[in-house]
Image (cartoon, rainbow, N blue to C red; front, side, top):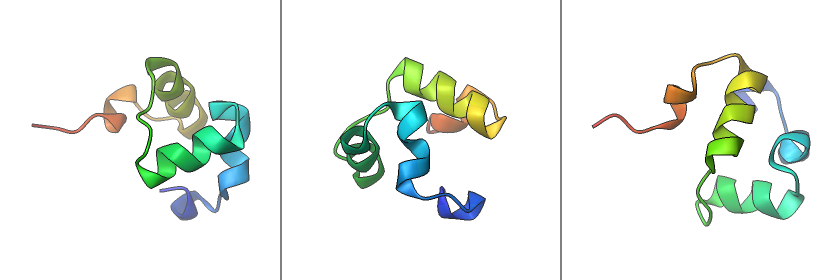
Length: 55
């Protein structure tokens, strides 16, 4: 997803707070928190619903 926007991992640090959190989220080792989702939705100008899997 981030490559689609021309971003690198370090570009998400201001949103997710630390490089380790960014790395863990992108590798699937950590789930996004509600706060992360809200901040990412605002940054990408999309609905927070985009971060939830549809059933």
